[in-house]
Length: 262
Ligand code: FES
Image: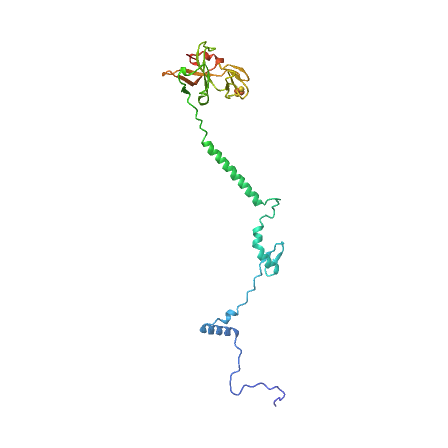
């Protein structure tokens, strides 16, 4: 006997069609891909890739030393002002110099070093080109004896550094004639002046005085002026030769070439 209370099962349509079966997802994806390849459309599988989580926004330090996010208002402000701050912030964190930055001190040091190097180089270059002292010739012709009067003649003082003196009686040779005196003070080497009014040589440096014979008589000069060689040249002119000196304290004023009899 049939149970009438049993719920009625849906029966297949009488048309005989196959009951609808849910397709497998993998098979669907493959089919979609093939269809996309056939039509040139983007595969739906590509869009189905899992989404990559977004990277966190970079953290930018603001000028107050705090950290903030680039997306925040403070981060935007810090991002905008970061280049200017990087340009102006030239001090190192551990630089405690009160007036100048470490960079400025380094600049000064390099400048001083460069200046010192340049000065040393210039001094070395100067050393390579020493002063050239052009001394006058040691011998010169002083003209004819009759061109001179009695007394001190200063015409050769500046150029050749000698006084030519004509005397009627020499203290050593006891004759009339010529002698040539060096203009170098025997104290420390200054050049005395001839004082015609007092008929003497006076050194301006320390006050030494010399008579026209060359003998020292005042001041610190320890000895007489030196005489130099004077002879007659072949042409009859006076020839003065500074390469040979005669010192009275050594008895050299009696040398025949220390005095020219005339
Ligand atoms: S150098 Fe002439 S008195 Fe000193």
